[in-house]
Image 1: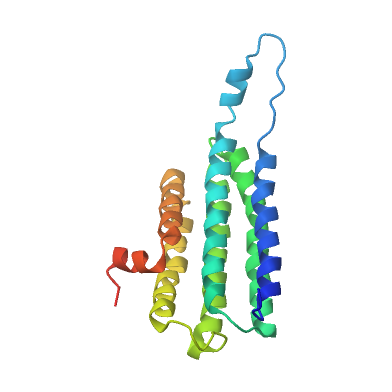
Image 2: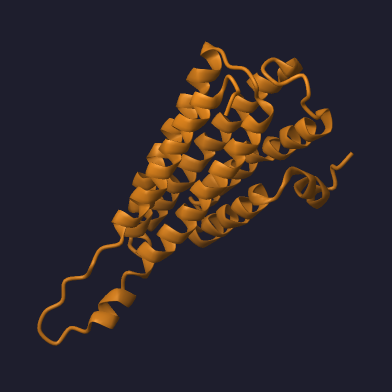
Length: 205
């Protein structure tokens, strides 16, 4: 890469790669004894599998969106570096919130685990917006060849994030299933290319 932001992207890719790899550490090999059955013991760890799959998808989708942002961002400054580091801080917390969810899903404290999990993605959604809006405001750090239509589509798509993840966060106080279900739907929405997301929301130009 010959862009000014190449080192930012390379460092960020490394953080995403480590965070997504750490998720699998929550899946343990069960210890069995006596008449215990390995298949049954593995099946009982369903919460770890569930948390791993959705968190793997979420981090992967965040990486995709980070890549989309930096396809347009051509320059960097100290503020962008700090905002990107704050976003990566949120990404680094995901393995922890994943472990909390995997451990307490289906347990008496599952509601608070879902609150922690949803709260993590709410903060990340806010940080994604702040990073992108800082770079995109009046094309502050975008390339001269940036497609205004594509930039506007990204801005509109990300604008939904904080409000909808706030709904997930509030829902966690009421229904763990509803909160996690909406989290999954939001991940699918943000996995869409901006042009398809614009069509899905009826906001395409």
